[in-house]
Structures are given as structure tokens and as C-alpha cells.
Length: 211
Image 1 (tube, rainbow, N blue to C red):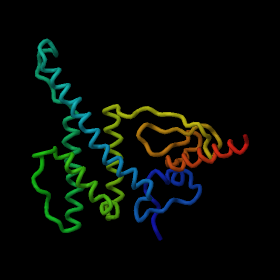
Image 2 (image 1 turned 180 degrees about the vertical axis):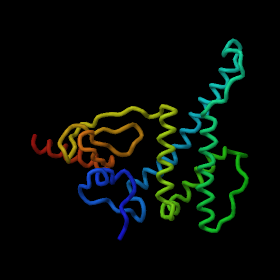
Image 3 (image 1 turned 90 degrees about the horizontal axis):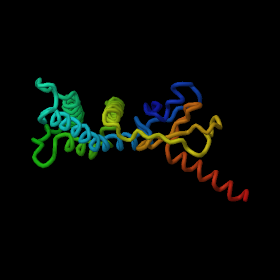
Image 4 (image 1 turned 90 degrees about the vertical axis):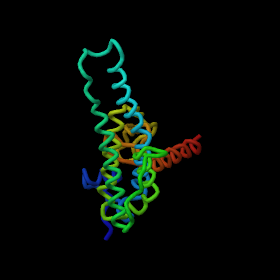
């Protein structure tokens, strides 16, 4: 029997035990597979924002008239960027080892290591997400994405949707900028954007017929 998807699609089932869990195909469901692919790609947008904050802090500390005359302390974000690179390379090494492939060639000539590793993992993501470590990989990518969004303050806008939740009937469905799902603040129902769009289309058709 297929195990339940470890993603956000089953949050309601895990929290309340209501309904049937969405199965993995074979590990993650299609909605969460697409979400992980998007989060991995967005890491390549987020790390330069963090790098800019790091270099900006260092530049400001070295400007004449800035600081207290003491040697500037390194930005904590620099360690985050190094750790992100090590995390991505570790997953690449794990999948290469599983497939019996050689270690990656030297990188950093035409693009930074983080970018090339993200590109490599994206190209092999279908295989990674069916491997024995698929769940751990997906969770770690999601965790890093949350941390990077928080530290860069990127995409923090959250908006209430127009239509009520199909489960509890409250108008508390909301989605954050960049997310591909919405959450009900009343019953914690999670819906993909495609499911919400279908709900909105159905409601619009009912209004047309009623008119």
C-alpha cells in the first residue's frame, strides 16, 4: 500500500484525522512534487538577496565614518550561504552515489556553485523524489526556503481569497505571495491553487445561471 504523501496536502488529515490521506506517487503527491520543484528553483532567487545583504553590511561597516572604530564582525548570513551550498552539494553527492555516478566536476567558473548545484538537482529531481531519501530531501528544501524567505523578507504578502472555504463555509481562505496553495484560517483546510480556481469557476457559473 502506498504511504501517505508527507507534504502539506495531508496537513489536515495529520492534525485532525479527518478524511482519507492523499497517497504519495510514489513518495510525494503531484501537488507537493510541483511545490518542491518551485521551492528549489526559488532558492536560486533567494540566495543572491541574502548575499546582497551580507555584502551590503560589510561594505557599510568599512565605509569612512561608519561603525565604532572596531573591526567589523562577519555577517551571520555569510555562514548561512556557506551552509546552503554544503546542503545542496550533500544531496547531489547522495544521489550521485546512489546511481553510481562519479563526483561532480570542479564548478564556479561560469556560475557560482550554489546555482550550478540547484540546476543539477532540478534536472534530476524526478529521480531524487523517488529515491529512499525523497521525503528528507523535500522537507529540507522546504525548511531552507522558509528560512531564506524570512531572512530576506521576500514574498511576505498574504491575501484573503474571495470565496468561502468549501469545508467550514468561512471566508478565511488565504494565500501568501509565491505559494501554490491556500489555507483556511478556520478549519486549516489546505487547497492547491488549481483546486481553489476550480471552486471559483464553479461559483462564477452558478452566479451566471442565477442571473
